[in-house]
Length: 287
Image (cartoon, rainbow, N blue to C red):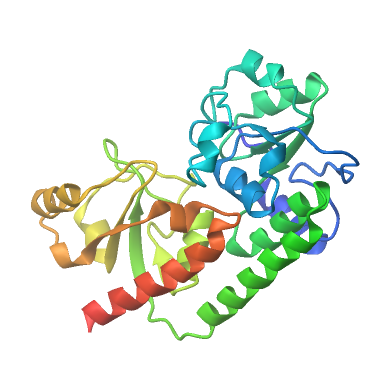
């Protein structure tokens, strides 16, 4: 998928102007003056909308928007994050459509804008970007107090995580098989893992989600190999097969909850807690 814009520009904008209701494309959005009709095409932001108390204003979602249960089931689906049923989306008569640079095609954003819809484009690049994300969505939809409550919770959990002197580890974080795929250090996931002292492999990559050759040098460089639950849902049997096929010690292979490491929004607060506990368990088992 073509990038919407330079990621570093987005990050600087979010750091410098968190109080301005400006999205990842630099578009300013005024606060709504009447109840909105929101279609969210980003699973983690759909969950965030619920956390902000906006569930009555969500009129559409993707079938990957699975949280929170069971309430999410009552909201109509318009398809996937990349292939939506456009006529169905338009029939819902949304006032706002929320997209993400990594999850939704640029062409979709352009089509929605050309049709005169209010499109909010998001692109968190690091855990810290959750705070301006809360304020952006909360500010647009008049949930400022709720957004500040989430920001306070996030800051408290993040501060606690940073107070720990985590042992440094090099980790290989796998998101797919056939072919094997991982994450570069220029990803939200890698920056989450860095909070507990984990540096992702490979150290350098031309793409954010590189295809990997499972050679001996890469396997030996990793102190830990993590198998994510998404987008490919790795199972215990996959770890057994990997250990056998690559002569890799089973004790350095672990399943990890991908929602907790890759979902921003309200789930990121729980994700920080989960990651801290996960890292402690790894440290304990390695002693």
